[in-house]
Length: 203
Figure 1 (cartoon, rainbow, N blue to C red):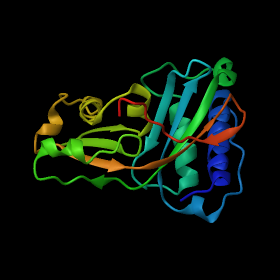
Figure 2: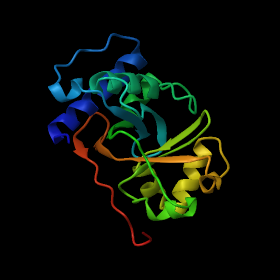
Figure 3: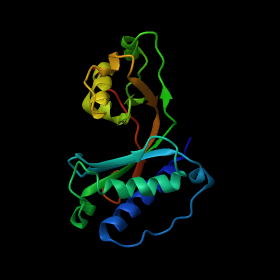
Figure 4: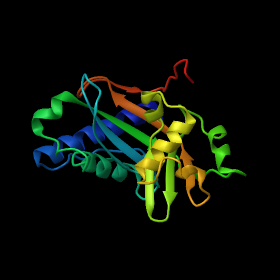
């Protein structure tokens, strides 16, 4: 859907928003293509470098905002991810920024909940678990990074929603899938590449 040039722009916009928010200054404006004016879901992830540990990840699974606005808002939010201390200016040159642009979530329909494991493509699909007001989302790169199979991916998504690990086996729990295109900095503020998810032999 998006070119590598557009992906690079998305990451540069996210990096600028993170830098400006952390330093308490105004965010520089960017000239964006028409594709960034379309509403789209996206997530911005901050990882430590070179340890590659999660430092913040915030986003919008549904296309609520034009992509350009979603990138900036997600980047601002990632600096204050409630799971971590607020990002400090001394960390800016020790983190890499990753942007995931999402397709709209699609409800997975199966005859029996246990059939869900056959519908999930590790390395392609991200998941959302929903039950009542509870929601939990994991991006497609998460099961790849952790070496999970489909069943573990389902369980971890349910736990992200505050549900029991086996909640995906209950008819009241709805499971949605989505896909994403991912671009990431190779090093802090450095070159930006499209991330292609690779599976190991366990999958």
